[in-house]
Image (cartoon, rainbow, N blue to C red):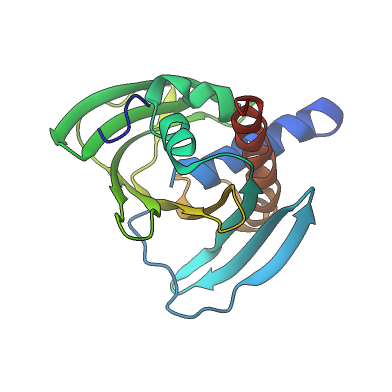
Amino acid sequence: MPWRSETLWSALVRRCVISLGAVMLFLQASLTFAQSDDWRLEKTDQGIKVYSRAVAGSPIRAVRGEVAINTDVDSAVNLLASVERRPSWDEMCVEAYLVASPAADVEQIYVHHDLPWPVKDRDMIMEVKWHRDDESGVATMHGRAITNGVPEYSDRVRVHKSVNSWVITPLAAGGISLAAEMHADPAGPIPAWLLNWLSVEAPITTLQKIKGILEKQVP
């Protein structure tokens, strides 16, 4: 792997926002993003912007989160590509491990998210591929759910349809821009309107965690 030197009321509402939203953000569907660029700004919070747009054939909107971070590309890649560090920024992730490395720049990872009762936990096997452009310095990750690699568990719902991407861009003035795009089918009876609402809140929580971790590492 390159650079391996490498998200009811009160408390339950917050937990649902983070956990179900985390499924939307990181348990991402082999569904295709709409071919339009009509991203709609949904929320801005502490410098983080979250957009959404319709996806043809799906009631669930695609989501894009953006944030500027005072760090470098290598540090961001090292954090996001490190399977064992995933729980540090993915709050509901209780288990993540490498399943296989079918190629030098490709990994298949298992991710288990703990969701609050009465919603069943979600898990998936995601195949991720990293690439870095030597000229621009931009690093990208594309991930998709795959159907083999780990047997399904009776107490968890396996997510089979999911796609997501990270784009890490160095900024001329210093620091990076981190953008995440995602679309997912959570594979269970969770209303689309609720998922669409949660998917706006979860990227903010997740990107805040990533920003906090990376900026603490800056000397």
